[in-house]
Length: 206
Image (cartoon, rainbow, N blue to C red; front, side, top):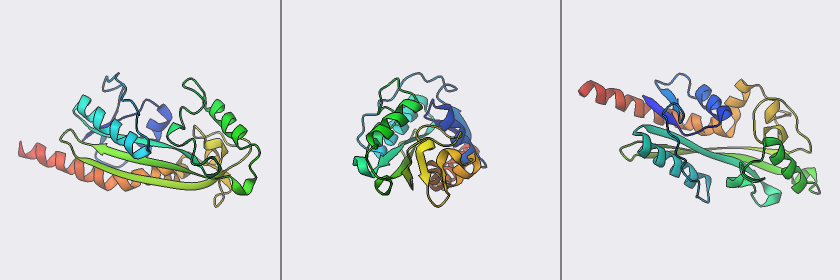
């Protein structure tokens, strides 16, 4: 089954491909599908944004589409940056800019109050109108300086106590077993396998 993955982020696309390995699916990027339109993320929750993107790109492409929305929710900031995680420091900001703003906002917050979580929602939409959603969460805390060379986004300052390392210090294989996106996609694998089986059955009956 051809599956459109609704992202232009190369880091995210690489992660998704690794996490979907072994399924009877060929993942196609927006660029490969020659889709230049952007579906506005006007939702107020990860679920709303993932659903908007999955349904919108499925309608544009005629392909079953997987979209996700994810971000960092910091307890001491009332859940911010949340759905604004990628845009929190401005539309042109780099990962380093976003981390700098986060650490500035938490400058006077003691370590014991720096709890946070990465939260991901995956939405899968078919051209026929089916919609399936899953989610994944991983808890951690924000440290006061970046550590690690892997991952992207806020990974270098997201410390996972039970691992004793930041998300960016984990090898990609380990991150792909425990991350919020990994957990959401693991939950999505049986859904994707069933949709692929339906496609094969339809092809046989034609």
